Image 1 (cartoon, rainbow, N blue to C red):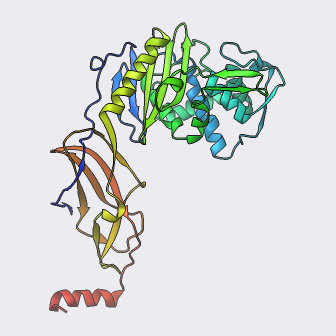
Image 2 (cartoon, rainbow, N blue to C red; image 1 turned 90 degrees about the horizontal axis):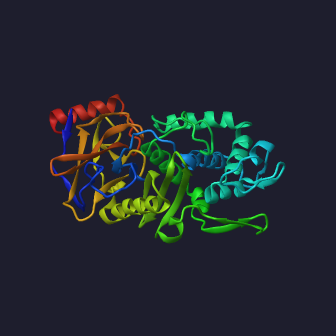
Image 3 (cartoon, rainbow, N blue to C red; image 1 turned 45 degrees about the vertical axis):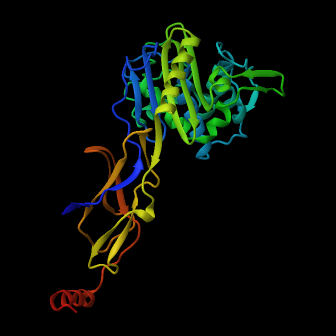
Length: 377
């Protein structure tokens, strides 16, 4: 039987975010926009968030994600050499003018894709990882499904072409952008303002001007075609809190950047991340016929957070716990739920698990407990 502990822990935490703001709550000019917090994935603003649109070079968020994941899982190394094919060298638009047979490291390729949105480098990396761009695109679509990007389909790794079958949504762009910035490696490249390749003979200047003038900007990716108009996945971090602002189909670079700035300003002014109770402050649960009387608890998955509004009423934590757990108990066994409340409103739940092993006592131990309970021994 599950019981709710009567005492609620009032930790002075501001109230958690309510429903996301909608179209008219902020003056966002673009028809499609999303504001998401990285740690919790909570959406704070949405406008046309699930409307399908062509993403232009914001497509490369997924391209970069697959490259970074392959680096971090050891499939490739930053020092590996990538050789440009004739096909990769043929790509125009934003590029670094690779020549057929030209070689660059994975590190340089990542820099070119992240900083100047180099189409030729994106294709070269796709071919390096999968043999052909077509096979790489299959990987892109599989990864999109894994991330829950239900309204996305890729047909290329660059976004250079306005293909009717190449589409996504502001919501889905936020999902893949959030996943990408979980990898600190990408910020080595996405925060570059000016750099160069080829021994300093070819200058690179970031297409995302927020990197230069918006405090805390960590990236991430711009895009433009005549059909997609001006697109941007902008990320910024201050005081340990990071947000993703997605703008699609902006009329101009200036309006696109202004929209992203407005969303990020709203986020930093209005919200904060609040830690949940630390392991040592969590309750224990009695263990029936266990080698210990009780087992301590921890939050499942380690440190978690609740996103909360600044300056609001306090949030309270309560615990849904079983009256006891049957022995044996193994570390990691489900053991209850932490509930965050604002007033009578439940705003978040986090699972609790056993933090230690508790064995089962033998027959003699059971007899002694029964005798103790019967005769007060």
